[in-house]
Structures are given as structure tokens and as C-alpha cells.
Length: 267
Image 1: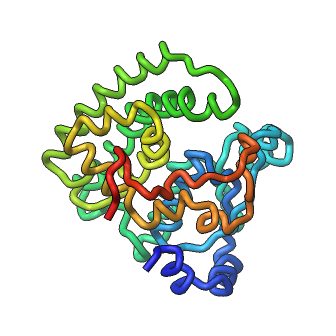
Image 2: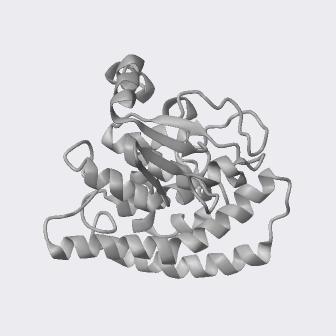
């Protein structure tokens, strides 16, 4: 059965709307934003309903007073849980994972001090080693062209050289563990997903393809149903945003691919 039909049967709109009212969760962001998708993935892994509120990035809505009252740094997403207002996507995902630890996918590894420390270490590695390079490559090869701007190939070359070093560490780690923090999917893996998904649409995907363990890991985490939903506007944003207001073009579903990455047919 197609996963959209499955989710529609499991979570009918009336039930989602009822839970939204009960929990009161709001996500201010944009369905194509990497940081917004990180939060959506955590909510969807937990099977938690929320109200998506589109922030028009193209018009600069995130830099206006109304939004700055939610996040003074003018960045998406912002997560609201009644009186709790959070920004910074990784802080939001941890809040969701801790608050709903008994629900849906267990995104934390809390069996001992050692497993918690390992999880925290790998989240720091993603944020400080992987993300700066991956975000720069996404900006140069995906975002800038969508604005009609020219890619700086010098920046791409330098960033890829740095990313190769990080991925070499990942390759070695994944020889020992199915996922980065442990043998189960956690926030560590989830945090990588937004930039990885965009990089799979660029020449940088070869860096992922050339490392067998990394390739298997990427194929597994991008194939998760919650992630497919996070990338599908009709499922994650409930059809609210019919156009990409970053580019002004008709909506495209980057995760909804007839073929898996590297051109192989996904079974």
C-alpha cells in the first residue's frame, strides 16, 4: 500500500485536528527549509500532530517584527508548545524526543551514561563537523541556483574536500555500528537528513556513493516513512503551501522519487 494512503487511514484529518487542539503544537517555518524539515521529521517519527504555519522567506517575513518577536535571530523554524517557544531545530527535536520518549520511534539512547554521552557526542559532530560543510554545499548547489545566482565552484571544491574527511570518519564508524550513535536510528541520524536529501540531487552525491557503509546508511535513513512524509508537502504541511515561495515555481517533492539515489530502482 502507498504510504500516503496508509497514513491517511491511520491518522484521519479529524483526529489530527483534534490532537493539534489538545497539544497546541505550532511549527512556524517553510516546508523546503532544511531546519524546518529536521523538526518535522522528529514530529512525524513520533506520530505527533501539529499546526504548520508558513513563513514566507522570499518576501523576508522572517526578518519582520512579528516573526522577530518569536525568534530575534530571524530564522526558521520556531516551535510553540503553549507558553514554551523554542527556536534552533536541534533543540526542538530534543525537546520533542524527551517529552514524548514513550511514543513512536525511540530517538534517544538513554540506557546508561555512556550511551547518552555517545549520542550527545555524535549530535555535536553533526552540528559542528558535518553541517557547516553540507549546508554550504546545499547553499551553493541548490539554493543559489533557485534564486538565479551563480554557484561558486571554488567554495564547492573546498567544502567537498572538508566533507570527504568527515565522511571518512563516518565510514569507519559505520563499520562498527548500523547507525552513527548506536545500532538503532536516533536523533543523530535524523539531524543529518535535510542536507543529505538535497546533496543527493547534486554532484556531491558521489562522496556518499563512494563509501559503501555511508551509502548503505544514507539509503536506509532516507528511506524511512517519516522522512518521506517530511519531504512531501501534502503530508507534512497538509497542502497549505501550494507553491515554493522561495523560487516562485510550482511545488516539487524532492523526496518523492520513482528511483532511489544513484539511479537505482527502489523496491
